[in-house]
Image (tube, rainbow, N blue to C red; front, side, top):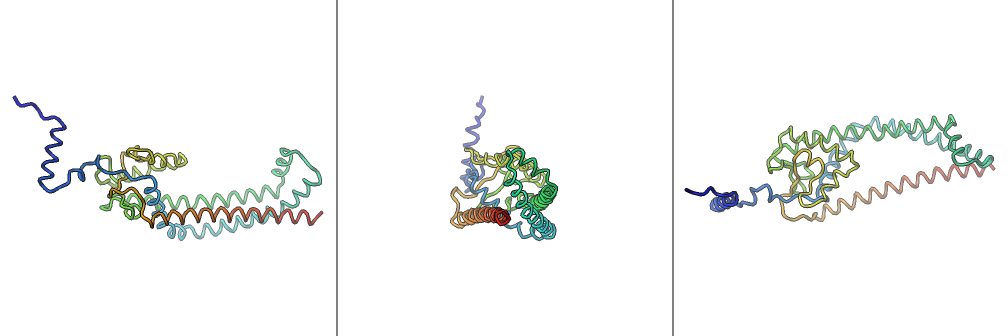
Length: 262
């Protein structure tokens, strides 16, 4: 009686048959797929976000202009109110808690802060909602296409598959996109999980049973991708410095008005 072949023997026979057919067995084995690194995934995502940015600005332009105008008007009101409040503080020093309560009770300051809060919420929420809708169509459409990747992922040689290495259906790609909201809601901890070896799976990869693999063996980024990341870092630093300078300018203007009135 012939002993049944073990799993290892079956796998060996399949590999031998593939070699005789001129195929590389490793290229057809899901476990042999190399997972994409966190830096590759981030670079790909940022490329896709840059592709969507012009359309996002076009769709949100009118709402953003109104929000910027409201924020500017509220900032001017705050700038005009601060000297008066500081003069009162210098004339009648108070403990920090009492000073904060008095400032919050000031009707002019409260109205300006309220308008500024509404404008800032509009400036943040409008682009966010539009981006989510655009990203949904972009990600689901491309990841379920023959490309198996968005343009950003494709530029870096990445592709999205199920756990068996097969192409995603539209429903599966949608499930992956919806699961990605949890990675965002965890303050990007879910995305950072992709840095953990050996499979480098983000939270939404685990939930949706998908993976992001690289088509080539090299895990390093090309020079142009490193340059792209440097540009992003420089832009973020420039934005932070601009915001800091603007706040400092407002405070200096308020102090000068106070000192000039003494």
